[in-house]
Image 1: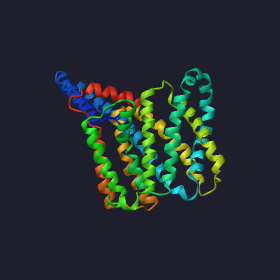
Image 2: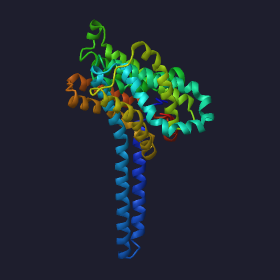
Image 3: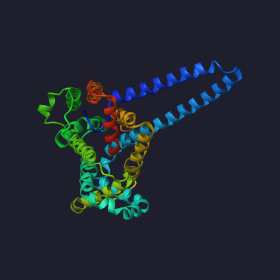
Image 4: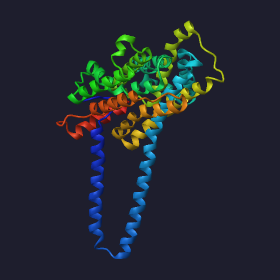
Length: 365
């Protein structure tokens, strides 16, 4: 059955091929009909048809910009996370991020939360758990990992979310992976070890591992729990209401750490990073991503997530002057191939069933 976080590339390709076949059949049918019409009528119909198809193509291209924008925002956030390590502590930026996001949302969302509290209150425990895994543990460990590793490595490791989700689904949902998922996961893991060892995997045994990479792996593992719990519970709560309550819990979780470690002051060197983290990856990217799912469908939209390591590496190269080495290319290619393979369905799985599973899971992610 495969993974519940990203949909299969195979289903996405079959959807596009089916769409193209339908268009071809329609064009053949229209061509036969047009042969029996006067020439003037045919010219008018051809002109109208060309205008409609041109408009549809423009709409499709604009729709494709939506997931690209979301992935670009998230990729830039990884680089921002690495950049700001010298100017603000992990606890401080994590708290400020959700605090300002909470302030921005409150005038718009709080009245709805009050009106629909009967829908929210029964699920407070689930929302608290989701907040702990997705907003606190994942983000907090990522901010900490940024002190000890590169943004490029963080982007590559972040691509492991679908792989880890496969195994978390085994534990929680009893979702047994197929052979492609197992082989793809092993390949991706081998690629990750290769990158962490900087081209010499055996060197990890002597060096004791790369602490930043290990922290990022743990962070991604926690985010896999976040996605699986979303699928398991399938909370019937509007996206922004759910996000708002999760942010509130995240602020409460931060209070003990703030009391213990204190907060760094916001100044000219870190203010831009705090503002960016509060608005773009926290609020805008999720909304744009959901818009993309509505227009392109969950299958096509999810494929764009594989661009995150590429975008992150390019931004880190330009901004932070991080080197892209041969071991990044080799390890990244192995990881990407493993991820694509892990999303492949067994030949015996029917397309309609695969599409239904994909749609259900992506409504939650």
